[in-house]
Length: 207
Image (cartoon, rainbow, N blue to C red; front, side, top):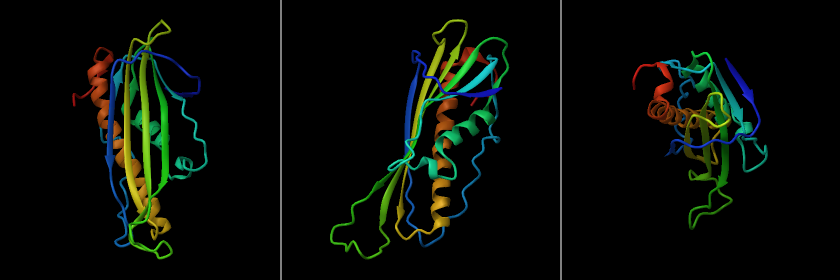
């Protein structure tokens, strides 16, 4: 059972992980290959001793530059919701899990032209950098207001794009960036769950 909430919650952290990656795209040429579908069904689900799994969206996109997450085919928040749906199962009777999206941004940054270049002339040099970030708290609650266990994972992914990239290449580049971001987040979230939530795991294939 999955629900999306919006209130701000406080809890004590039990573990924190920060990961980041960088990829560079400068099309054309060649055209970018279609990215894999953003899905986690190829991984084994994790069954937890919780009755409910709630997604709490603390992050609200400003919906203006330099933020562009609201313009993308798939946003970091949508990627996280897909991960929760595919990977987590509530199999308990009483406890609850809250997955708090603290940040799910994609920032566009203008790059300075290379030294000696002519700004009016199109070139093969990338002219913008994009930084995607997902910051997630996972909290397990019993009967008390304070969480019994908590982990935090922060993942970032960076890419650059050439000013000559066409619409389709841009779409594929952003899809690839989201895919890479969520693959990194998936690996670290799984690691942290087996480290800090081990007594709440009812069934899972050990990574």
